[in-house]
Image 1 (cartoon, rainbow, N blue to C red):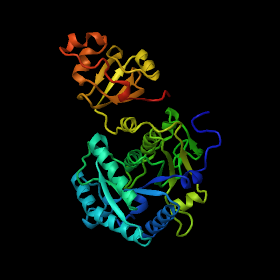
Image 2 (cartoon, rainbow, N blue to C red):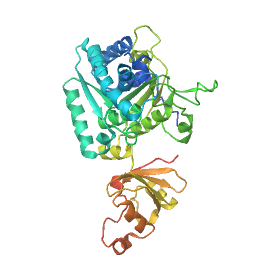
Image 3 (tube, helix red, strand yellow):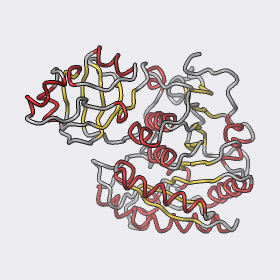
Image 4 (cartoon, rainbow, N blue to C red):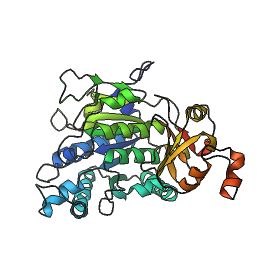
Length: 388
């Protein structure tokens, strides 16, 4: 079986209607017109979709871009590139209008809306991650539809998600959703950028994300969107690691007044990403989906092979350390060639790892003056990346 084939995979429509909990991500260009107005007819059709999903027993979470696009018009910031503080001001203004638009659209169906604003730290820091997960669970149990956006008013360029594709994947992982739908301006993954290559062909199903899949990703389109296919592939990695299926689908319907999910149910083309195995434990799913690892540990080929066999990372296999991090921080493990071998929580600071790298575990106490764990990263705190 290769990366784009699986024995009798479900269709996009089948995967959508059989999901128990849906996370649907809406891009800025779908929701906000060029003049900054909310596309209310489109939003009304989406609300019809949400109501239909709920009527058959599905839970729905919406992850919505658009606050900056909507808010900039009301602050006379349209038509030019915004500075960070101007984006934050636009988000603060636009988020109110966006939340109200969702409230009005879903109120027609008697559905209560709840607004949740997240920063990367809310998913990266374990306690805040669990608190957010509990809030989602309670809202869904009470019958509300959470509408999520990145908290652009306080996020900075250095720490923000930078796109809502990965935010949506983190929400899907956090809430144990079994389907993530990324609504975009394109109907899925192609072998090349179809805007530039007329010979590009559509990829209907992806079961593994290897280097050749990553090479298919194109650049982000111009406009309000900060994502693009690159971030959608990154989102797929997060979702699949959590055992969650993912769809990349076109958000604009071809039929009058039809919602984007109704289009999918009617057979519209999309790319379906299918996880190969069962979801990881909540802890390992959280480690695997870390958006902002604090550093990198480079290992030799022997250590990389041992990790694939399920062992912990020992200091003897470490050849270099990149970045500055502390004990307990999430780090990436890479091979000498630069390939990602895994991610994990370091038992030592970057300073201490540099001192014990290449040494036996029995030498740690003599080198550092104290005896910590035998492993740099214990296998219980380690998620291995599948070889590509």
